Length: 361
Image (tube, rainbow, N blue to C red):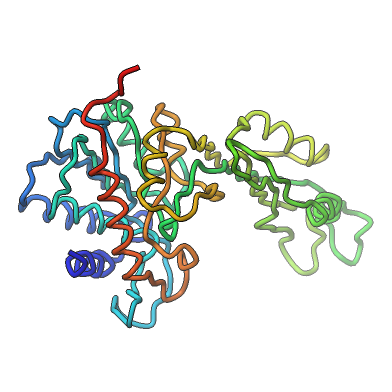
């Protein structure tokens, strides 16, 4: 079984699929699925995403397994390859190793009482609005009837619950340009942002506990631009702020707190908003997953598509074999031993599903 998982992961990594260029890998997956296999399933293509349903006659909880096909562009010193326990390749960790587990379930089905829905989707690494999982939900509203979803994001096989919210805010200060030999004739926009930058430098992340797990809320300056020439007083300064907030906070209250923190004198535009997701720590199917041999339960600080499932009322969690510290890194790799363990955990969970759902009161 492991040999097949490794073979599939090398195949997936051999198809370079940066965000916005997922067409070829979607074509290849669709062709692979078109050859059938030992299990009956149906496949629906939506854009460059695929929804595969199998065991739909099952009477257990409806389970969704999801993985994105796009990768962040990274530099590699060679083609996808194996060196000891490490498998190198674009997306090896984030998150084509999760996709290989999904393919493995199609090649070698795990006996389970649960109807399964496997979603291979495009655009996760880009802006929230371009993420094709939203398009998939719009085309297939029945997906809101799933009882649980598992995002096979890289977590080192640790169960990471919920996710924090994220806001990208564009802050702009306006001034008056002038020749730098006569600066008194202008109004330097760069100086207008000094107070905000000083406040950001002294700002410390604030812990916030939700469901027994602790998230860190923060505001960080991530991009800054000002000026148009070395001898011109700048009339514009723009700062991008990245806000991270806890699952129990609403976007509206975080936005209000952000605007108060920035204060007067600047225009503020929210350019990308990714809502958070609750951890659902005591959900019976998540507790059952933890009981399958999970060694550690953590909050998910980064944003993932468990939040997208939250918008349609489906509880979700993050669990995948990818090496978390390798995501988006040069010469990205993941552990073959972790791939094997992740496959074991996933199959043990699916095999443990109750034969009837919901359970009797």
